[in-house]
Image 1 (cartoon, rainbow, N blue to C red):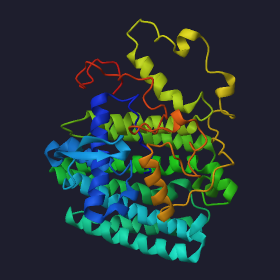
Image 2: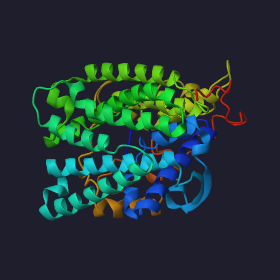
Image 3: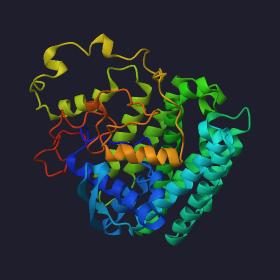
Image 4: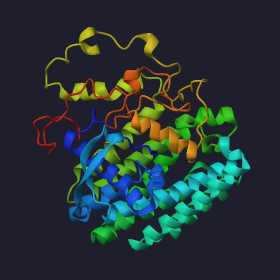
Length: 412
């Protein structure tokens, strides 16, 4: 699973987090039901935003069903969005096509195992199947998949051209996301939402491209791989300014939408998108894994009350100096030299994800950034991958508020 919007139960209202998980699991199961188990590898955190937007405009588009226990949910059942919902099918189509483009990009760059001809040939066939499958599903819901396919091809062409500005390189991603977001207005029968949805898509596409570039900056520099920041000579300060502009545009576009259910859309596209940007540009802050726990503790504190017992506020001072990462704000985190390069989509990744799911995260593959952490930090019992604390410090930020988020103080 990949994407920049990865909410944690510590920082989101319990009802909204459950709804987000319903869309996430619904997307994964829709990929399985329509395209086979291997297609679940392309499950994309950001792709499911399409499903969320469709439901927010017309809740009837996303009927729920009860799903069987799954290892990724700690072997528990859950209410998920039905696999035949048009919003989740559109999300599946976009995820498949964009994943096929990502695989082809790895092949073109000769990344890791893709440098081997047999692996590259097999991966190319997988990418072709994913693109064809995504095109069929997109056509079934009335979406022109050619927009996404063209964006993937145009991105490769632009990266081969020297001297381009950074925003020229982000344009294909912006156009692809704008088209997918805008199509949800057609699915929901609200054509007047198409313009603000397209603007929201352009802003979010820019954010996703820039955040991914910042996250991979040090690794790409060390490996000599392509990175848009390095290719255009853009420093982190300018990248942050562009992200802040995109965040503002995204917030204004969301405010203009005619939605029947606004809570989850604002939580993901406004709050969580901002948090993702803050996280990637502030890796020098106190342990990133504790950030959402601290925020949840602060929001649960009664107005004028004291901090929860045992928190850093009651103990005085900040985190110990040894717990801080080296480097100041805007410095990309150093990669553990013991970690291996990521293999990209392929059989090795498939087996690794299967073992990780069956062990609820206790097993971590050689390229996973949590591989050398303690058992408690590796354990993932319910999707809190953004904090790694496995819910030990949280009792829910919205207990008793019926998840309406009116006056509960949780900033949902």
